[in-house]
Image (cartoon, rainbow, N blue to C red; front, side, top):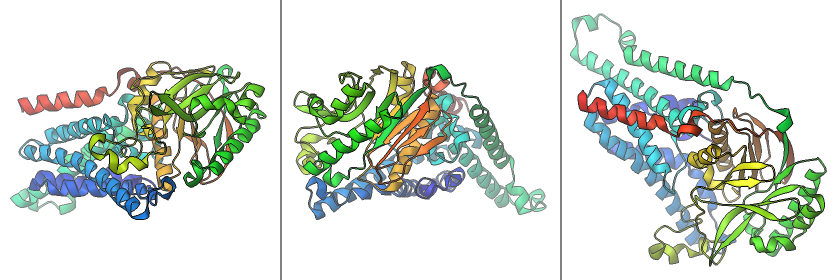
Length: 494
């Protein structure tokens, strides 16, 4: 399961690599294998986190940097291990239940636990994202009830495959005369395996129906949006030469895009390592006031003695008219859980002297081009942030990120997350990153353009603001609630 995502991307393995664990948990009532399975999955999928070492650009010595890196990698793997272990702990108590009920409850529990984990601060590797960006058809089920719709199908198919094996082993052990007359291969093809195949086919057919819907773009509402990939290495980002390179790169990029008649320009997370109050003294703002084209600038906002990681909307007069503060911060990297205990240990991870704080949970972002959905970097993994903004009138997605301190695999996974958010909300998505991958994605998840990696690039594409509302945008993750209710009722009455 760990190699289903970038850099390998063997997405098809997700449809049967959970089944062996299901067999072990149900047939042999073992919990430990689930913990090991989950550590392997999350550890392999998130191995890109080791790219933060060495952190000499933050002034962290080599050995403490290695220690922090190993700790972060271990912690996120163990956190994922806890999710699957809890699932297994509950599943072993269903070993005497009917197989159909086990599949229902097992699917409901997995979806419920993923929802619980994603409501916290540490989340990334849902089973659903194993299908992005390769299986766009199945990802369209996200329009029904979010990423848990895709997760539910994956878990249910794996559960049915596992139950077919358990049934086969049970029948073989009984050694009935009529069973001995049937070949092993034929006995294995039982009602559970057939059901798994049918579910797999039906889910993809439904996804294809959604995938095939025309976008019906309104040419009168078309917007030409430009992105600038600054390519400022983190090693110099906070130094004078990094600042000079940023000012030059983003100002020149803005002017080039304006010459292409764009309506707005998006910059990456932290494009200008400045507080909002210092924007007015920069050549970039002078260029904005001269050309009059909207720009969205990644920078820092102030909140008392603390600061926020923010995206600022600047109108054609050079005035900051909107601000979005990043609400999902990276644990240890951007904020310190239990700061009173661990604060002194990881204080130096912060790029500024003050403490970074969370933005408000529910924000909207109004611009001269209309209301926009905003996600800053890590927030791409949290579907609810995008759903809320789409429900409240966001017409297209602006994703502003800086993945420079990780590997290319992380940038690919990050792009895959934004593809899912575009499909779920039925919105065009514009991605601007520091070093890659910047991209434009349509509401069907098709990547219209994708930048190179570790390159300075500018690009413009035409997008179309949309006001549609998918079932997921309107009702949220209703399927997970329904599965839990049905599972509970089935457990009580059967």
